Amino acid sequence: MRATAKRRPVFASDILKLGGRVRVVEAHDRTDGSDFFRISYISAGGDIAWQSPPLHDPDIADASARTLAAFVNGEKV
Image (cartoon, rainbow, N blue to C red):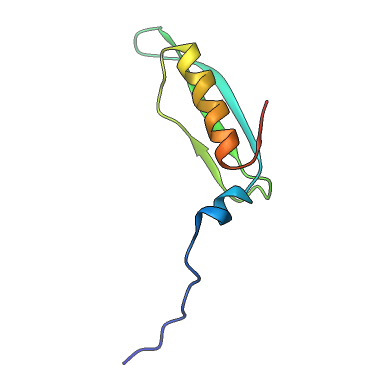
């Protein structure tokens, strides 16, 4: 039998402590030339980074960024 280290479970309250910055980034598709948006997130400690799949509606991208910023207790820039 092998001993394994126990990890502390992740709770919703842990997510609220992440902080960080959420941005809406405009990007350009190289294959068909269309523009799209992505949501980019970097935690306050810099150890977590995430980028969304392409979003084609700027209003949806902005609302999603605000929602993510509220969820992680970060700021939308």
